Length: 281
Image (cartoon, rainbow, N blue to C red; front, side, top):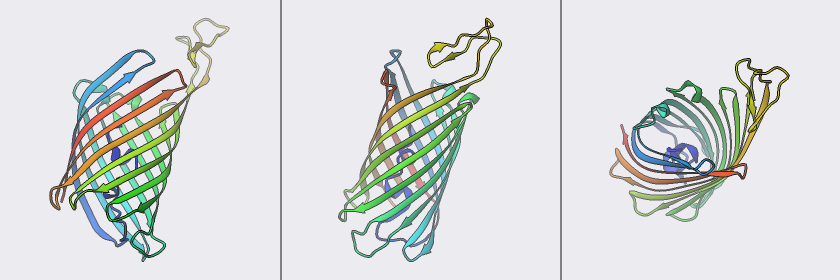
């Protein structure tokens, strides 16, 4: 939740695609340091969670030219995140992605078509939280003028965690507004439909609970296998400002808001405020 550059496909400056140019470029090596505060409000059981975190990310980004009108962005990120109070949320991870960009026609405001494939793995101190996630992205970057770029698109991801599989489909739109040569402000909106399916194995030591109810058994204490499903609709928002101090140093301040409506029975609301520093070698 706390890295908008990955969960919502843009700003364009983070992808490495410059509208109006599809020229290849040598690899860029970037170090990102993040500090932030997050809060989760679980309406269903009337609890909340608050914590601060630090995160370090090492990135390699490369733009490979294919034709006069197209390039592929190849990006890789290795990261480690530590929380102040919730040790079981500490994690390390790897994210790799390839984004194909195509500009079919000439003209200053010509659109750029984007297709992305991304895979992410995260490992936690609590091994039960380890997961892998693969995401497909399809978007169009529309440069309205020399300051404003809109990027609407579609996204689908599949996440696997132990015996739980989660499918997420959604639509998003990103707006990047160039205030000056060094300052960009952005607003990212996303709406998702999320479905999780969990397989419950048979056990001989304790009763099995499926979809909130006890599954009866002929033998006391023996749980039968089954499947539980959970659906939610998610609304997500990111707003931020990115300031390029010079060619090597950039700072970014962002606010993230997410509302997860679980089966219409209760919402989980999350907010994250973060400060990011980027150094480009």
